[in-house]
Length: 470
Ligand code: ARG
Image 1 (tube, protein in one colour):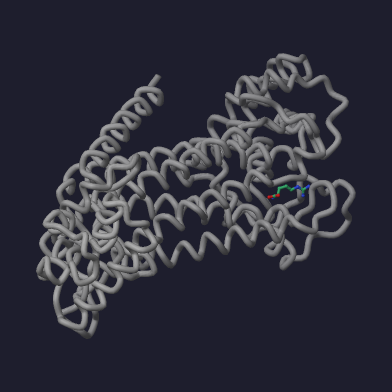
Image 2: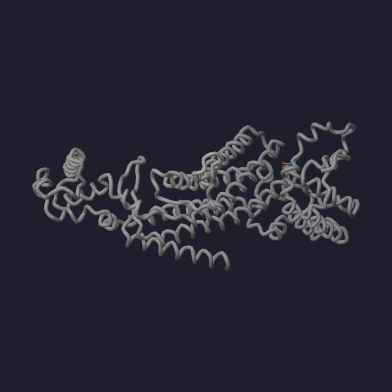
């Protein structure tokens, strides 16, 4: 960025130059530069509308459009020279335009303020990025479904309170994340509806006396609707906060998956091996292989939450309508977009390359009386009230612990000491595989049920891809 101070585009009523420190302090250019493409896209549509409405002559419009296209390439290639006094991307582009084609360049800002312009840019940008994020989420869902298919016969211990609870299929666990991601995608798609509203024409806050055709501009830019109230349009960034909230939930889901991977990859658990490409070593301990990627996704979740608090705090005390505080919407938004995209990409790669230690998982699934509930449910089928059955099996478990035995090690005589109605059938419900496949409720962990869920998930994924293409 060049250091030369130039006269500002808004400096008509000013006699003194801006203080250098103030220039640095107020500038958003260092970060809003990334909006350049969307800013130019908006200006092109606005210019075409101004021409159609006879507000600017076709000759000027032609020059503006040509120069905007050139500026687009120049900024894209890095050849455009930004200067400190540009303040933000909107003014940098307008300056570039005027330097190129003279006073005609100054016509592009007719009936427009940076207040509606910046809201437009943010909406155009976020619209694209939500589209990208949705694709990445769908990709990760697909990976989870593929893993679920691959691990259909892997039994693992399911936990509550981080205590062994009941055996489940690993596929069932993996599909749980597919569900969570599905809701994340739905939320983002709904957010997109509210982002996809065209604010241009609101001008500074009150609209304009010039005969703009807002609907035409919206059509050119592919917006579904236009904002209904100019004050609302320039004042609010609820769509930014909403997006960051949706992103926070998404990151929370990724973080919880990562947390499991971190625990499962420990020597103590030994349930999963994260491939070398997705782990890092220790600078001092040669034997170490650390799950840093998973840890960073977990850590970066905190960063996205921070962004949510930032934007909510910026918004809460603002008087109507636009205030410069709103410039602080950009960094949390950009940082969230970058963090979410990177996390999704790296996690997708890591998840696809996991190796689960099936024998280890099965071994642990069978421990800890994980099928005690099945024994109680077996008694229920003999008419024992569940609460009583619970007590009987609880005493059985205590007996087993005292004797250092497993439930399956007990003789029928021992079983009958606790309840006379026990028969040979009890041995059939104890094995973990039996216990898993007995849970046939809709959404349960039985192989048959999980297989059905996989089929439905695959079908949904396919029809979504067809819809996206169509
Ligand atoms: N850089 C400003 C922002 O990000 C653009 C709008 C400035 N508008 C104004 N009237 N000062 O919000």
